Length: 227
Image (cartoon, rainbow, N blue to C red; front, side, top):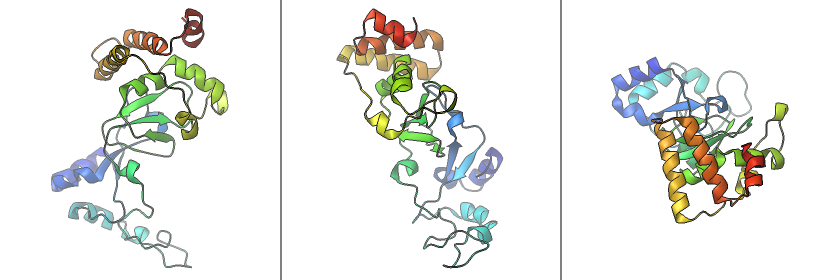
């Protein structure tokens, strides 16, 4: 882990370091629509990769702690393995290593919270990743209708929170809107992501549009959204 100042120093030494330095987020950093990654960055040096000399020079300060231990030994260093001293000891997987836009949501949710990641964020284990940037799905996962459903179908956590594990998200009912309604919802999401308008007004419009996609009656909308 490095801070913003150290990131700037590495990039000044060699701009080629940029792809190896990724913003790091935890579940508490996620908000509806956007994530706040703050000042934390991670050097993501996966198995079989060769980072620029500036990255290696920085990691060399910690080499004794990064060297893999010999099998059957204890003490300084990381767990035994065939990885090189500057690599991650375990592969992170294609999705975590990817810089492609995707959706992130919290492992424990007190309210519907999903955001678009278009900054190549690296999340910790309190965050789930969905390999899509579908704005329509993002609208659903941030809707009161989703929150109403989640509180009734997902495993409970403390203080009224729920745990939307991947198996439950995979089974989430996704309505198929008309092409015009999908375009309308996607357009509203894009406006919400731009932060150029009143977010509360856009949220109300999105809530109504998502309920329309699910063909809810007036009474069902009232139960799901509270209005």
